[in-house]
Structures are given as C-alpha cells and as structure tokens.
Length: 245
Image (cartoon, rainbow, N blue to C red; front, top):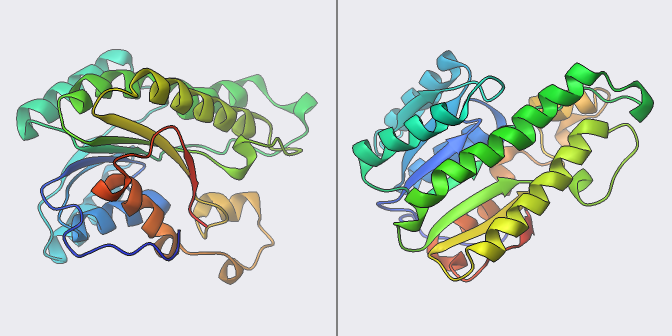
C-alpha cells in the first residue's frame, strides 16, 4: 500500500474519529487525515498529548479538530453512548472511525500470563472496541459511504510464541471486523482492518528493545493504507485486512 496515491482533498468535509490519537500511528493518522481536509476527533487517555496533536493540526492550517479524553480501560458503555451523542450534536455526522488504540501488556510464556494483564489487554483491545463499535454504528449508518477501521497485527492471524494476550486480542479483532462487515454488507458502512506491520512506535520499542528503529517503517510511511480505507477509493472494500506494508 506504500504506493497508493491520493489527492490533497481526498478527505475534504469528512468527520473522522481516531482513537489512540495522542501518539504513534494514531497521531500520524490524525495529522494526515486533517491535512487532507477532514475534521478529526481526537480520542485518547492523555489530555496533554491530545492537546499537542490539536495544536499541530491547527498550525498546519487544517480544520479545527475536537478532543475527547477517555481511558478505554475504565470507560463504560454509557461513556461511549454519551460520546456518540456529543459527536452527533456537534457535527451531525461521522464519516469514519479508526479504532487504533491498544495495549501490548507483556510478552511472556502463555503459562505465566498474569490474570490482571490478560484482563487489561482484553478490556482495552477487545471489550472497548466492541462497545465503541456498537455505539458508533448507528451514527455511521446515517452517513453515505462511511468507514469503520479496526487495527490488527501480524500476530492477529498467526499466533506467535510469547505474544499471548495481545495476539489473542488481535485474533478477536479480526473476527469482530468480519462479523460486522458481513452484517452491514448491504448498508452504507464498510468495515475493514489494517495490519500496520513493523512500525517505529513506542509499543514496538517495548516489544523489540534491541531492534534498530531505523530498520522498520515510520508511521508516515504506512499512511497510504490509512487514507485508502477512509477515502472514497475504498467504497467497495468490505471485510478485508489491508496490509499497510
């Protein structure tokens, strides 16, 4: 997907929610979507990081974004319903949502995974995605050609030793994406997932502490895939896992 070309107004007049928007891939996706004309709603758990992204978007001359501070680990169903109600009242629509936020947990032998780590990873990577998608779908359905994008991983379709809870959570995400895509196949909502591949992020540095970061892609390198699934070029793509690399 590195070679996907898009014009400077590919996302003009679209309203797009990005979770995990304060850092890494989510931050770059938010900045990129905004640069292409979208009004971006920044969701993350650290207000200071979201404010920095907000400022960067304004400084680059893009449409003014919005900020929603929310910790997915503790958020409830009502939090998501209230959030969607606010989006609807403030913007009137939602053209796309990139569900990017996730936690790694810890890499360890399966037999040694701590129950709390397992529960936290499942809460952030699976349960919150289910509740958020459930809340978003009615609003997405009211918008023509809307796009719901989950984030998968290379360990989300082939298990890998020591990746335990994270790997299992990403298997669940691919399954969730496929279920929603099949159920909403005849609606205006298309649902897909992105596997970003090896990317220079803080999560990657924790998982591979000895790796030379310069040997893997930067978030900017993989943005063509993220733009593709949000722009009208992908209007007929549904139920797919797109490899960003």
